[in-house]
Image (cartoon, rainbow, N blue to C red):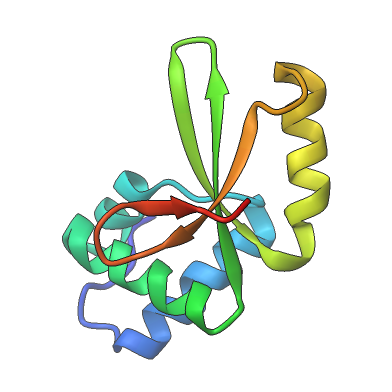
Length: 106
């Protein structure tokens, strides 16, 4: 199911937050396709949601390199614990979202 591209910015961000709560993580490429907007727009939405305290950016090592997940703040500790239980202690890094790239918080 795709979502209409003419949704307002606030509606799109609300939908992204609802998806985060339901699915526990989101993928920027999937969101871009779902909302028919650019990756830059999705990164901007996610940065705005992080600044508002609604989510945290997580990056973790995996079998084929790295993954990036955007996780609601209230699920951050549990998600990190799950990642590190599978991939090893210290494998999950919490980042701050910027308009370009991320910076490690720790």
